[in-house]
Length: 248
Image (tube, rainbow, N blue to C red):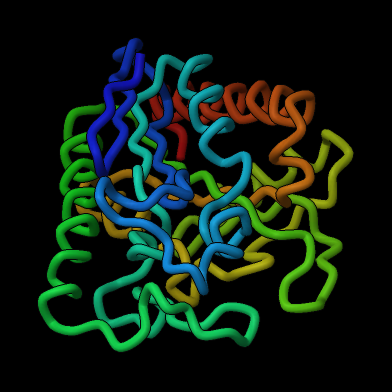
């Protein structure tokens, strides 16, 4: 069962031989206790700007099947984005759909430090979780909006990578066999720093980092998630068996 805190939700591993450890940086639309949306921002709470719809469910379902460890952010990406480095212009996003985000407008140094506590809490939990598992694959689970700032996206699944191109190709081929439009480094590229969180921790723990991006109309469909979970689990076990046998 998951254990919860105000800022981070951790799923403890049930299988010592799980091939994957999971992260979900945009799992929640919630703000920390005692914080509420400014009136001008209430429209944001139910949008893709606040969280990745379906990503938390997919993470929990995959963790359950694999017995895998997982860490999920317990705060909205609009509070502070754990999938961005500290020097990113969108760490504390202040514009969405061309509108100023009042929550993040003109933050003073004290408030910024308060937000950074959440960022560090998430990354401390991710570090501890990856340090405590022998899983060879570190997978970040995300979802993306079907329409972004007026542009319709035809891609349905994206496998993002930086160093692990061959592994990403294998996973993309496995997922494409489900009959979905699966592409590499779309709608974002891991080589542009957009798998920051999983890349950071996988590198320090000598794991192979990938990020899965699922279009939100699919990520929120339980039947689609069920198919993805099976395919991802099979892929993970295949890779783990090959590594155990000495294959790359």
